Length: 198
Image (cartoon, rainbow, N blue to C red):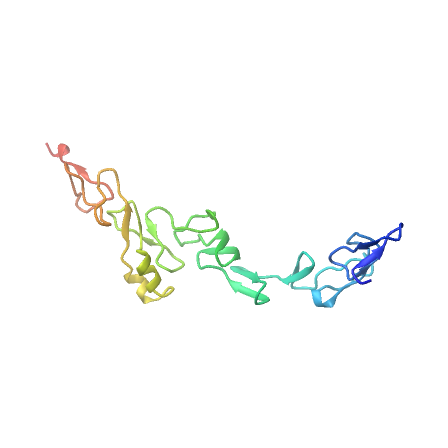
């Protein structure tokens, strides 16, 4: 029976998953391969390696995807990763970050590639700098949904502060100076203590 062989006790045992027919359980005991699984028979080693351009994924061979793409089992082809990824296993799971001149972190955190502190994601490859008044910032969710990926509208995204320097206070997405502090001229992330004026 295809995919099985009789062992020394004449018991029907399953072949290695890469073999169509076999003489034993190992990958080096194949007698034939299934071309539907994108495998070809190597007579010398009695194996069924994937054909060129494909890689093994259990029983079947899947297309090898280049760069910032991943293999999609549903479509049977390579799809682009999220714009923040340099490598990924699917659209929402980065295994490497697109950190070259993008102001993103180098290694993924929980499958995501967020912007470095002081920058925000504007639906483009490159993270944009927060206002000098913010320690960290982000674009409101509704704005992020409405702005198409990396268009001229991405440049008009208005981020709100999500955290402030210790000399500032959070107020409706802004970071004005706390009481007892004033702005530097030109402004900085931190505020100047009024005590330093006396």
